[in-house]
Image (cartoon, rainbow, N blue to C red):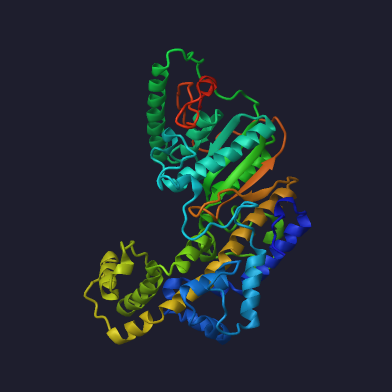
Length: 488
């Protein structure tokens, strides 16, 4: 059965899930560890069982989406041949072991329809006030609004209004929490460049709010800002806490009773250290045979399967990209065998080019001669196998949610090993960022937070806030009662 209720599952249930995941991922590591650019150089198609090759070779992209990657059937979900039981079992197992990737009760979006908040303007979320959309891409607008609401709910449940935003980056989430949701926020960021950007954006927002205040002279001037008092309870949050940073949040939560709640949206699993700190985190998973996850497997877990499914459904011409790059790899190695898996800078609209045009541009980006001779016949034979490249990549992508599930369940088990319990759920429900999960946890305590956790910065801010507009009107009452942002 699908682990839909893992948030309330027992430790034994999570241990069983982890054991099943490691067995499956070990069995199919030839898929999760494969680099699609080596499809031809390493004969990746030949690594599949012959019966799988026969079943998948002639499927169109929409059929791959319907028959392999999607749970529910569609018009294309009609088997043109009898699939081998091993392939059917592979598909069923992959779907059943992965955590659900949508909030409970959320309907599957149709086609390429935009989320409701972007229906009016594809670049501006109607759920965010314009001041919080400035400098923020649509994907991030969706994320900060969603996570912000979760943090606010956690604040209401715990009665704690002091938020620590770890890995705050350019401060978009912190500004929304402080000025949009009226919470006291401490933002921690270790990259000086991002701190400077955040400070600049903070000042822009403050100037905007000062102008608002000047236009409303009846608004009382608030008291000077205050930093959280010593011994005060805290909530931790992290949006896209990269690599080991998400693990650091969990460790801090376990070690610091003063932290009464945590929400964490992890990312960049490939940046986790795998020897002692990032993965595995729990003693249980560390003791399971085959628990190791390669860099490539963890990198694959960061991909949004739903985005690729949409491209398959639409039979997007951009699907040619993997095939082009795999063929180019054969050209590179034929010219200079020592060069393998080189990163080729993105070639704009590559799918609109002929392979020869693509190859010349790609070679030039690698500092190689674009005049390398191209043997047309074998190249055309490889290009004709485009759908096999797509099919193989689809198989690997089907396992990506299992890798993410194993990383997340490892963290759950770790917290339970440390005497903690918490719910887990998909937080972001949008084609922009469907693969993200948040881990949410409540506890009590009043012991001080350890100093020097990360680089700190201080921002002096005005105590004015902004309630998002409703029907074009601002709430003066909420404007009056808004609180400060204190950033470290």
